[in-house]
Image 1 (cartoon, rainbow, N blue to C red):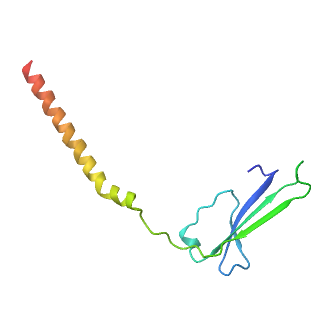
Image 2: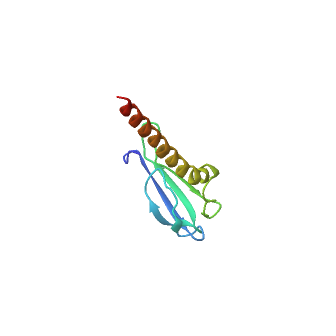
Image 3: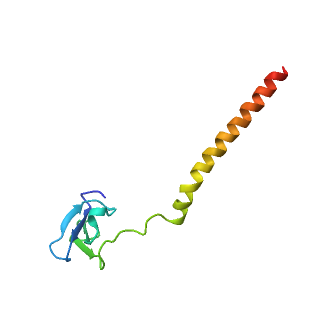
Length: 107
């Protein structure tokens, strides 16, 4: 966001009162240290040709930040398939090497 046109801030608080600013960006990804806190998002749109006054918007999360559910099924599947893929590649490379040697032996 162009600072001359406005700004955005994220704040956190245990009780939705006296929030502490944790970021001054358009996007914020909560971290483990945010668990148990409420997030407050503040946007200020500066005066422009369309708006006569600065516009100030706020939103406070209704629920506290909680830990995510962990790995999704897709990610869990890849925990097991990555080794299979590596074994498959190694097997293929051995096959190609054997074929190369056989072709070389014919010459």
